[in-house]
Length: 221
Length: 219
Image (tube, rainbow over all chains, first blue to last red; front, side):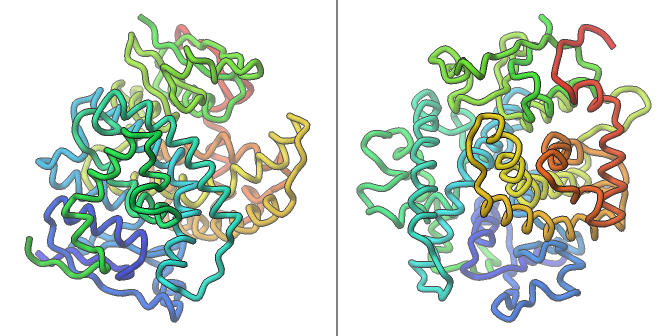
């Protein structure tokens, strides 16, 4: 059986999300870099695989899949022993609630602010906008007050054990902190001690630390 | 105890859930939340839904919010009605393609359809000014994204294959408001999107709730 191929970008945000989960699940994979700088992701050949012209996608022994959260869910379902998606019906429903919270209440503002802050930190030659960053961080602050309420009652977003829903907050959960400091950022405020606790746990995970300098082919764990 | 759906009758997310409850012929009681009076931001409400949003369900004491999570829970709990295929596949690859479609809805449709509808439908309803720049850029991006849909739907009937799935139905509440927002993209972008959209609009479950969610004690 061929090694799983992750077609994406070494530093690309969504590629990192997938790599983090592959690492959590100890799945060997080969990173195949897509030449985004030269528009490879918009070529007719690429669009046949990913019709929205985005990275990443995976090739799992001939099975092609795109959308990072779908990829992560697929791999988690293949390796259920890690429990990243609970199977008991009510636990599963609470996982889906948490996964939807990430999509609807975190990602819209975190990805807009986070992407721009990441561009600035990496020094990429793309325009950024102070107002977009500020407005989205403000929205995110309010959303995280609700996170504080949830996380004051339980360790993780879906209950007492970590699930994909928590991990989906990477990498943007880290990038939004670039607007602050290690001791005080939107994810790490004295006023939200439970969010801070949960955030620090997430960024201490080996799967996140493994690709701090970018995603690389990983054949052994 | 019968399932209770707490929401606002014409809310997009409330009708998304009601559609799936009707699809699966699940009896439910609809409880109207007085959003105009801010009931969804009250301390009591926030105990059940910490983000102060509608809807949520109470299934015999089990509280769940986020419309897409509620829909998934219904499909997981109840059998598909006789003669229909489940709205979420159970085999690993079928499920993966479902998740891909569900992610497309949330990443490539909603972020552009929602602001379009918000600017030209929701804001006027609340006497708030429309931000034309936001509207124009949302429509422009939605138009580009629907090219991806046109390609997918040229090869298969629905977003994950030839059977309808939850992810197709998830589009209905905002897709059907685009015309009110001054956009006919759903029926002009391309023949495949048009075919798919028109079929979705004909679903009896959607038609039962499109003008407002309500209780269903029997089917």
